[in-house]
Image (cartoon, rainbow, N blue to C red; front, side):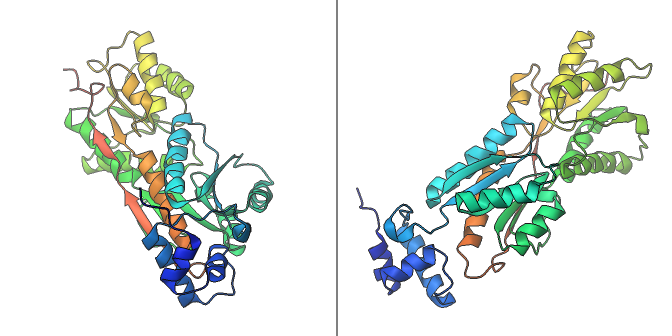
Length: 342
């Protein structure tokens, strides 16, 4: 087995003293930019994992923070797994901090967590990644962070970003339902504070507009990203004289609730009602029939986001590394959608 690289190996390859390597890892400002680049290049070449508990590195920012406010446990678990995988590969610890995005003292809470935990940077997911106030406060304090957001892959001046193209993915789902002959397609939205809700609704409307279909507002039913919300709203839809022939739920948890309500009402899926979700969570695979959905690789997204953050942490200046990456969730056609009944 090849012996692990040491701090002295890094110093030798970079042509500097091991104290200089320590200062670079500690993110001290006394090292010239060119020297920092040499040290980080040597660290990468040797695949050196800093021993952050060692005497000379106690001041180092040794952890990545993941703060979130999301009721979807599957999403949170997948996000944690992806972040942790990259942290382990890069020699960082992971600090997990759930919070209330609507709390009045949110900024203070986050800043206190950063100070206590010596967190080097943050991974932010919606709705925190879309909260202008907290983003501006973090930027003002030169706290490095990466954002996972719903939207197109556009330049960002605040931080590295991973963009999820929810709009086009939702359009693809709606087009699939249209190709099956459906015209009365209801849309069950998610929490309004999440950008994904608006983006997925926009994609649904784009697909209908392209076919010249003006969906009545009654076909859009707002709600939350929960199973119970899916059940409640589907019961209301199925009680109408004019039922939809298909329902596009804003996520798989809502869609699973829709499927449950349909079964209770004696409505056959997909012969009498087609159902599609979004995300490809366990809800979509464990339900029967399996749910048509858009596959959002949450663990991969989390790992890539963490990598962008660590690249930013290892840059020589705050704001120097602004990278982005985009993902288009892939349409997965399953048994819960079928041709409209004639």
